[in-house]
Length: 440
Image (cartoon, rainbow, N blue to C red; front, side, top):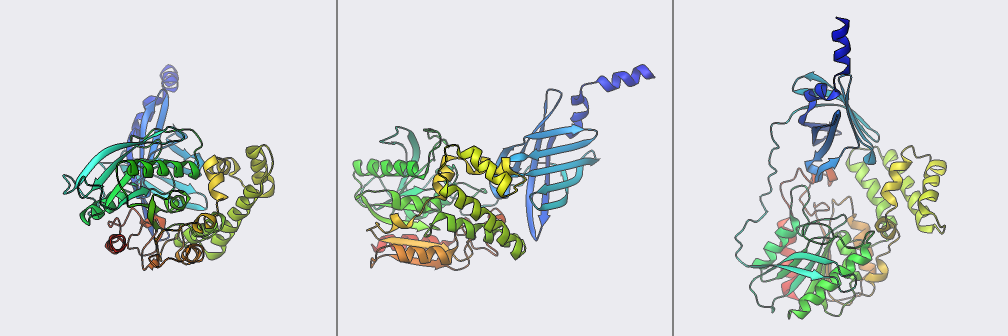
């Protein structure tokens, strides 16, 4: 009997790990929000490895830094976002345990996944399309990186107005795909049917576009868009416009070209980004049920960090900011925080003031923002746009009632709602964009 026990103890842990191999799904419920999560567990050597999906947040195959199955306890940790899940098998097909991320701590159960439920996105068009489309490539004229995209137009003529579409923050495909939605495809489809052409591009390193240099900033992305404008001009287009969403709306005014004749800015920053982020952090917290005092405290803490970053004059940014996080801010997740703020993109972004570029815009602008937008708040940013944009009889700056940051009809505006809403973009926004362009 002792010999048998010894043999069992030295068997590879992967033998026991087989009981949790597979995909697990569950619905995280907190503060009135229901958020589906999926964990994919695979064998790896003597242990396991895992990835995570959050369909409503547009996250797929999120790397899991810690995945362990020891003493019948599953441990999953995504350290860069402070997420932890520790659970035991209740039955062969169900897990139950403790989920935590930041201040959130809840009991959470998961079941063996029997396949993901398809997301319903009724506005997403399917080919063949009743208009002309062409796959194109655009080369950045300064850096040399090549971008791939789709030109959609009523026909092959270059007489139509055409928009270069600029995605928001984070690397995205030409359709600005997130949460199963494809808003840029929906916009392009609607405009093509209204006699307006578009060029939408995969961001650097996404889809079929080259990655380009490391540590690219918004200024580099503006170079991509300027090259796209010149590409269209060489093809014979005369009435070229820009359509930018979120950070894309920040980038559009940075594109310095007399070939740009109009702009559509969707949820675009109208105030310094450091102020925008202060409001964003507070509003997101409140929309997710955080008490006002907690939301304000987190917002003020982040604002203090951003101010420190913007005023930094030293020579070792990472070391000094990490020290500041640990000693001055007493941040228990300092190592995680520094990873989120040390990139060249974020440092450029948090120091950016869009007003200096907005004041130089000489063309008509349509600026829209949803009243339930918690990421780029309508009141402050639309006021900033009104104050900064030069007077132009054709410029319109409008708040769209009841719409969120993605211009979906929303209940709360919370980020958690984005994936739950079937509507990709409000028809009122599609109609407004088309009618305004046709009125120019």
